[in-house]
Image (cartoon, rainbow, N blue to C red; front, side):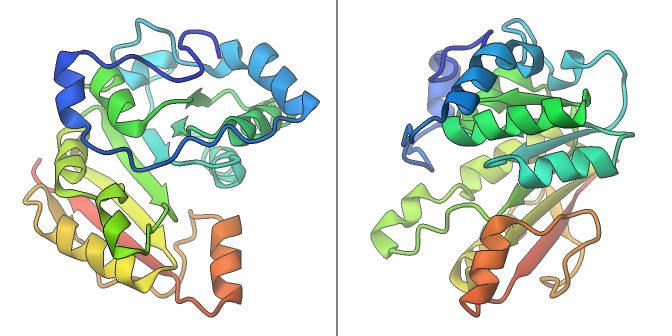
Length: 237
């Protein structure tokens, strides 16, 4: 994608301190010719400019900004952008084939209220966000890293949640979903301990109307996993 290398931005000294262990393993995957063409031809249209210090500045209109972290192949992101045209969306994802499919979908739908960043979320926020500049962050079905020795790779960690509290505006929303009960309990423990967030309710057993059903949700439900949605409001005014 134009504006950033395929491996995302190179963090500066301050940004490196924010990232200790990656919450993902970069697996290039096999690109189809159509996905490769989408990355090359559509990437520049939807990518953030290098000099974009504030994610909201990537759009001409100033409306509420939603960031989806780990948007996969874009299935949910495209549906949300269609359903909520009054908002701007930024999708963050590291998997090339998924981003290729997302770009294809955005072009097919003619959506212009979405920008895509192919890089690590911690680096993206450190480089392209300013305090209080994001209205909502949505994180749907992140990798639960179920083995105990891999828990350190989970995205939801105290340091990262503190970063989200910095960039989400007071009154803004943090919405997470998971089909892995131990990770749900982990999320609750970590986020409840962050003074910047107030939990709105117990884990929801029904999907909020604005969240589309995802591939991972369907797969988890087939395995008998309970789906939990967690909603938090950024404290303050």
